[in-house]
Image (tube, rainbow, N blue to C red; front, side):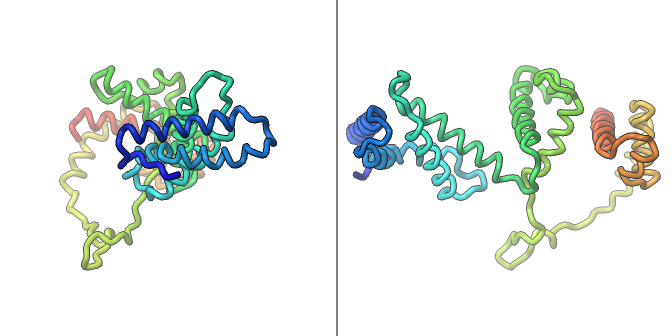
Length: 264
């Protein structure tokens, strides 16, 4: 049986969907181990393939091959077919769609990070992204770290940690060709005379530093003026290197906010 969503006439598509529903309901009604169940299962999967392709196409043009996305969607479809229970009063489409979409989202969460980061940070990054979108609409401006922390019910340090982890999501190789001549991305990265900008930045930096607390000022000074590593700073202050990293990131976020306010 060949079923297509994109080219079939509406009546034909409806008939195909009805037939696919009949197959899945017939399969679900049979007890496990029934000799007719495997055949009905295969035909039901085939009948619902257009749904898997349709959902996979929603996630196209996000940097992943369409064929790979389709395969992921099919795996979600198979899970839905195998787990479907017609006695729960939910039609198959209503059960299958969130199952397939869940597989696609999991694929992007697990497979498209340039650098592997803990699952907790991956999920935190998604939560922060969602909060940022929501708050941007409700507040009418870009939300601050404090806004996002309050919305999600987490600490500001956790928000900063999630933002740090997000940096691992995408990367582009400097060897990436950008022209038919073979020019690579790295060859186009030139340098500008930043002397004037540096002078302006130094003038604005003093009051920005004054906005930090004593420990943050010390960490920034040791890192950027003393050229100490985070581990060396941790040993000098008596805290962990991870804590130094978080405090340093938090301090830099504050400095960036102060400099943005100064128009730098």
